[in-house]
Length: 194
Image (cartoon, rainbow, N blue to C red; front, side):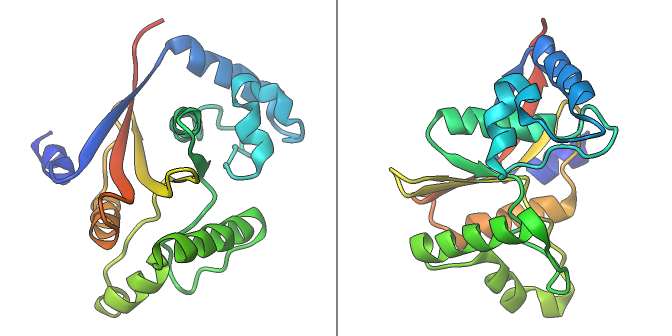
């Protein structure tokens, strides 16, 4: 447990609480969604995220997959942010992106360039790639148009652990962007009972 505390200590942690019925409604929706993965309206309170094309929804028989990320994204969107779980702003240069990942990543990178003048992937390749340092992509990128403000977060549900590559990515983003223009944090998603 001490090792996990050390990994998180330099990073802000924000709690996002859910009730067990939220997770159960997600699991029930997944049963209607999979295997055809066609009708986003089955996701109930998450239907807006499913319809947006900015989020990943499981195309596998893994009912709990993406719940925590979508829960946090939904909460941030209620505060005025537009969120993406499909934008791969930190990746191996050799990784080719296709479909929604490619289009959403290009869109977010253009928005970052226009808003902050920096594209994380470009800076990552300049600073770290030659040294072999691996940074993992963050779970959620969010942008508040009215405030010209960003959020970058790694989501951890219940007892999930923050891995060194995830911590390094968050610290890299924290260093890259001024605190007045971007929040970088670990989103701790925890149940609060029924």
